[in-house]
Length: 238
Image: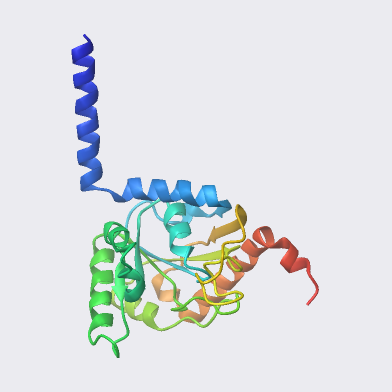
């Protein structure tokens, strides 16, 4: 009986390992979710706006180098991230970016054809029914505010008209992974279990997903998230 029990447990372990090896993203997302919840007091709202199946694009303001982890852990579905190639090629994290299917992009001035290849990979992902995540500002905010969205999103939607889910992220401005008080990642971590809020909005049909409209919606969601994550900053006189 003991032999049979151990054999059954061994078979389940091998089957589970084989499944994880084939599809590692759900397990990685689970561990990222745990990590984010250990580091921050996280409030999520509107996760149901990400469709249970089918392609979509998620857009969010860009506050810190932790944003992708927060977004990836909070999403009910795996996200394919469009990210800068220098970060993608980090010797410590490249293995993780490859596992989760991140899509690297570099300026055509530095790498001719990089933007075209990245857009083609985004198109393949969307046509396969995946969810693609991008930060339309194209860089970390230098002052904590939402900055002008760039044109790449319109190019993506012209090729693949899919719903766009806006999101507002608050609470990470001032962390050592943001640009507040100096270059990101050059300061010592000073906060632990800080309040972080991530609010998703209703999907916007592709025909209505103009840059200005999406930027306005992300600003509004961020302002709502600020109300919980940074109540003292809002209440402070300016």
